[in-house]
Length: 256
Image (cartoon, rainbow, N blue to C red; front, top):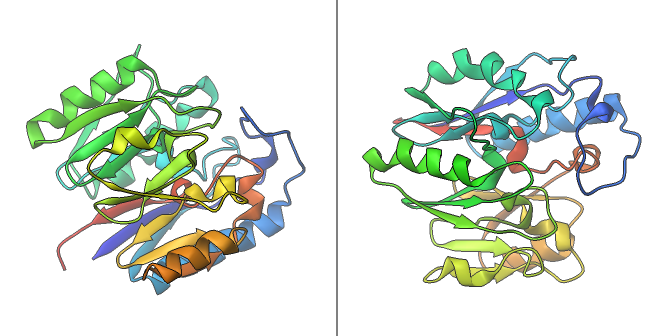
């Protein structure tokens, strides 16, 4: 069984942190409706969805992925790269601790979950504006006892590693070659996004399904031709906040 931990979006989402995108108005009502649709999509993929109440004082708090790196054996609480987001971690800790043993990243390390891509027993960590080398080293020390390898990646021109690539399954990666070098995934299958859809590389695998933003029909069609069970999900308001599909949930796999 998959448990998906989510949080309703803050009404002040349009005050979010931005690094690469120009600020645009975000419709709080539309964002709330899209978040409900997102949660319904997770349920349709077989997940049990747990939705936490909004934290209006923390504009980015809907992006729960950045607070925690979830593995079967442990959940690593992160230390976000911007001060305004660090309060999110303590406010989700109790919910995470219900589902996993907890470890934590400490200063001076910074690490955000959006920079951690898992493929099997390998964790790829993006050295980004939000995650530093100390963060990668800290994660390596915390997960090494469980048999995980940690490799660092240097994405280009995108907020998080998973802005530029994400897992299609245990051995295949969807990626934007302008932002992530395919060579780092040696031995894996690498699938480029449609060139007309550079932001399409963030997809969310839930069970046997792959959720793709409704904004990227060409990439969705290409994945469907490859045999993936593709589900289109509307997340346009969150894209204005540099968010995407993986950002809005923490997936915990539990025995049935």
